[in-house]
Length: 153
Image (cartoon, helix red, strand yellow):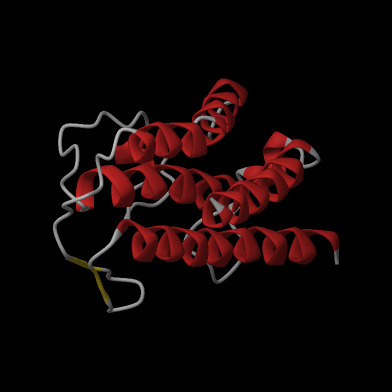
């Protein structure tokens, strides 16, 4: 599915950026901001799972590791460890496969409509939700790129 390829591509770029950035810089919060590079990555990772499986109510009990740390409205309270960074990368790597498996099993035939806080639009199909995830991922990947530019200037 093309939408999953877009999401996977954005996440590959975000992971590449994470891997080339020292842990100290991943945890650094630029002046005037509320979060850091690793928070943006963690947020896009946990939000993708939350939007696709929980918000649609396809699997409201879906367990998302690190969800409380990176959910909407959270802020970094302690620096992320390398182990946590690696866990987020692994969690990101399984997202498109988890969605493909659910699609193949026709689990998204009847989803619950959901209005996104980010865009204020009501999502009624899995395709619309995947578009939302791709747009949301792009917002946070761009924030990561902007932070990197701030640090390198």
